[in-house]
Amino acid sequence: MKSKHLKTVLLCVPFSLFFFSVQAETNADSLYITTMKSAVEQMDTLTQKDDIQLCRMVFERVHRLYPDDWLSLYYVIYADLTSFYMDPKSANSGRLLEESKKNLALLKEYENGDMSEIVTLEGYYYMALIVSDPANNGRIYFTNTISAFEKAMELDADNPRPVCLLAFFEQKLPEMLHSKRIAKVQHDKAKELFSREAKDPILPHWGERYLSYII
Image (spheres, helix red, strand yellow):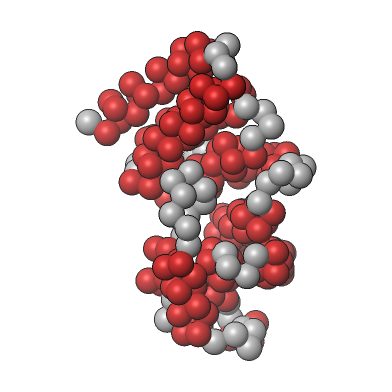
């Protein structure tokens, strides 16, 4: 049923966006917000890769009509990485990582983007590279991963995602590579930040589920 609903939304988006794109700017803004809100709400509940990729197509089509919008491109990348993490050994995992790499390079060029969120997503991408080939990529990208999350925290101390993801990542490292950060302290800090986070329906608000994996 969920897939059928998503397909219906997906089919309606191109026509709706085309129709409203010739209307007044306020109508276009209203359509953008409505479409993004619907797609993000779907992303928050989806558990199947095929459904997530359908949602990704909505974000991609929004971005084609609003090329100056960083957020729709952000969610294209987030959808690809979410799909990857669901099945890292799938036949298309390499393509998902390549798409993420390409789009991250574009996203980082947006001067109007939230750089803390963008750099957090970059760290999430490096984590995915490590998951794809731990034996080889672990030693190559673990520094990149940590640096990205630390930079994201510097850019916005109230962003819970880099705090949470860094604590999750560090506890997976060999003990000799652990920082002086205490996992329980970082867990509680991230939990507090998530609880205080503004509940904007289209801004990034994911990641809280990783708290349950931090000891």
